[in-house]
Length: 144
Image (cartoon, rainbow, N blue to C red):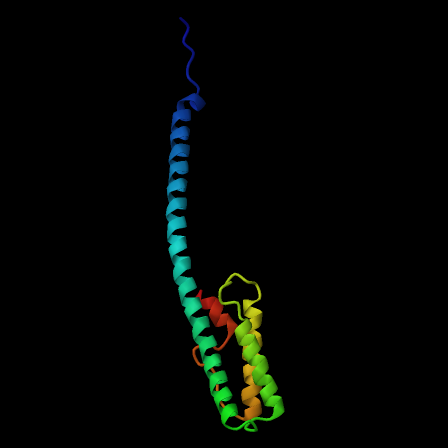
């Protein structure tokens, strides 16, 4: 019987296979843990952002309600131009896709609402703004 010496590669093969098995098992466990914690973190961020959007839309709707009440009392309280802008703001607020948060146009609609609101308040000479919103959109990204 002639025994040939085992090569170093044959000697290390079980060790390499064991290392690969542990790596795959660790990856699988980490992936599943990350998936569940990522879903929870996403849920928390979604709740926070949803609350902020709802609060801001509620502010604009409240202003619209006050302006509508003022118009009911005195139809000439606002100029035709302001009334038209108020109607446009009301249409924008009602068109906001509340039940479709993945709609790609939510940011565009919100920016149009904010712009129209600023136009109205500037025309009225009122210093009125929603203070719950961060000063810049960069802050929104940093909060995430």
